[in-house]
View 1: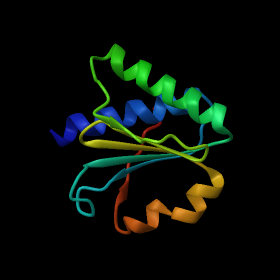
View 2: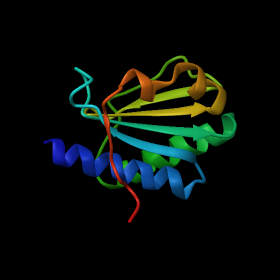
View 3: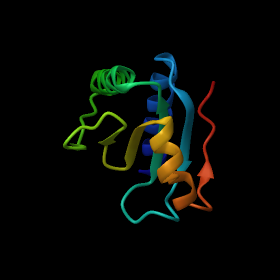
View 4: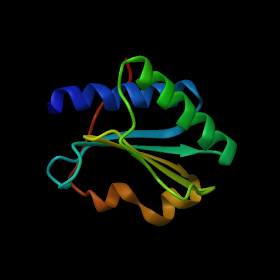
Amino acid sequence: MAKAFKAVAVKIARAADERKAEDVSVLDVRKTSPIVDYMVVVTALSRPHIEALEDKITEELEASGLRVHRRSRPQTDSWRVIDYGGVMVHLMSAEARELYALERLHDGAKEVSWRS
């Protein structure tokens, strides 16, 4: 199953990159997280950019037959979370990403190459 989640995480990263996301990271957090296998962290430039990224990712995965398990509520201007089961997506403003430093919370997580 982890291999399938990795493929989903890579697909998410590529969809975000197509919408001009910045600093896209895919992390294998199986050793550091009890709830997900992979985490995708993306920097967005504004609230409309966060919304465009969320729409693009959702559309891409729905076209592949994958549905969102949960979304962050309430939605904020600086951070959105999309849960796909074994993959958690964080769409964040640069300020939120720096403040919460999710990558440091998962120290030891392996970065996954997602570019073709």
